[in-house]
Length: 433
Image (cartoon, rainbow, N blue to C red; front, side, top):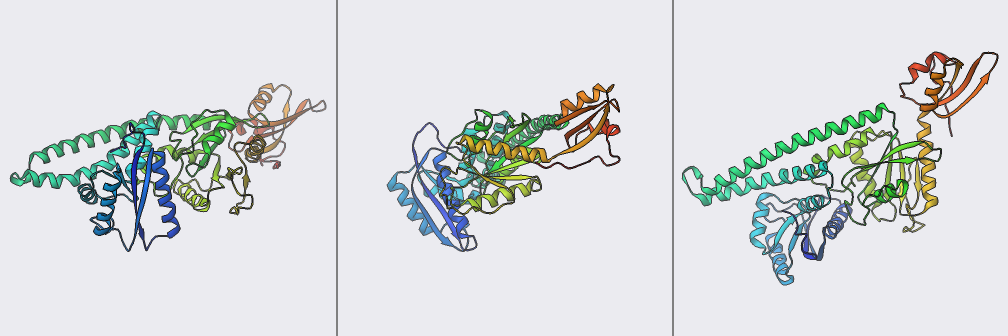
């Protein structure tokens, strides 16, 4: 099912169907992405064929005449692969494999192959294998009809069908095992998240279209050492690192898998748990490649996925990255809160750290307290958990007047409530940078 990684330069023809019902811009972007996906997988694209149609042909994908023309061209060029831009049905797959002398794969198989080569963590590998089996199972079922007819036994139970049933059972059993293992990994991840929440770690998620520069940004901000390449899906496994802000406060910054148009359904389901962490974030950095001509579509795809994850309401900073490559006069979609930077410029990174700090501090509230001198435990707690604490001793009252900023949801509120100068209001004053 996967591409042959041992061969350095496989060659391919790309095939796409331009449907009258689809948006032209999106189809153009989808075909460009298919080309980029092929490059990422180490495949050299020699030609691309498209056909305008009302609907995809149920037997051949494009018209049979067009497919014959492509088959002849594939033979002339002696290509290793023909890659289709849409997911092929089992019957289309069988028909096309008979027509072509080379391997026939679709967009889903190509993406699965890239993911299989890139996954590093145990969870990533489980998710990819699960997606591959979910993709394979219905196609195996499709082959069963052919095999059963070839068997020709009573009740069409030929030797081919017996082998197929054995394969089906093996795959279903393996899918069940993988789901159990994945559940265990997700449970462990959830425990880690809950611990971080309990410890009041401020969490920031880096999200964005694939190849927007998220990993480069993570590396430059935190010296994380994550893989950063000019290829699609360079990062598959979430990487979390401590980010130190200008005030010395530490937050957790997490890189996530890049989003893409038409991500295979099997992969969306398998990688849902990887993206679940985005919902737990206190703040989102939406990274956009501002020199890409289709940045508006990229942003739309990311916003749609965030909505599907129920993460659309989390505070967000739009980071227009790769400003060093962009035309200075380029139009950038307006946003409530945005910043134009290059991850390669130190001054821009400092600006980004400052802007992140503003958002982090905005989620903290200022409180004024009067703490008696004999309550050193409370002062110690405030020093440990607070941000930008100020205190002053007043001899008349034999107490400390303290102004401290704490995260709104911090459990410390219950302990400091008796010392608040104004009650019952917990928030005495809001603080703005």
